[in-house]
Length: 276
Image (cartoon, rainbow, N blue to C red; front, side):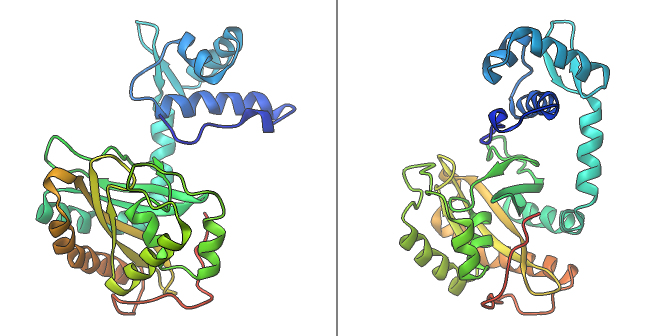
């Protein structure tokens, strides 16, 4: 399920009906399986009659679909919206063949993520051919402090920007998540020196990853690229072996985005990440 559930209590007036409809779509998008009306109402805390009205409109608009078993999932209009959104993300288009090459080399999953509303938003992925692989998907989100991509976005931003992005308590996603700010700062500084970031089972149980930053034409970190895999087949030695390759691929992507600096580029004091 999605880590971010919509807070309907903060919305009032005529917009509340729209917000409830979006909440239904958001829930269906985050669910691993289609849901029945009773489950939608129970999870969202909405009366059954309200859910029936909302879903009826959404089905007629092709935003939600219902099958002959009476279970609901996302409709075709959502797919069209998603494709239109991704088409605007040039960095994802520029990255795809590079990501495929990295997957062919490592045999593991490659993700591309950007900063969006204070979290990592995955905008592209090329899956490992192996049956067991990480759970993240395009369009899903994860925290900054516990992911390889997120720590890249933090490490290669200014100190002031880091403080802004880490204003809330750091959630322990696993037993290895760094939740102490001073320790996280030291880890980010070490990553800057090394040139890449390691997520050592810090965000998802049993998953390890290595990530490298992607810079735009202004030299600002705009995205990050990661290789992720189950820890049982992706040791620390593997991570450190593929780290430089992730840096090289990320640098090629940066060059495609107009960056003309070196792979070891470090942030200047006024470097900012733009929240999209």
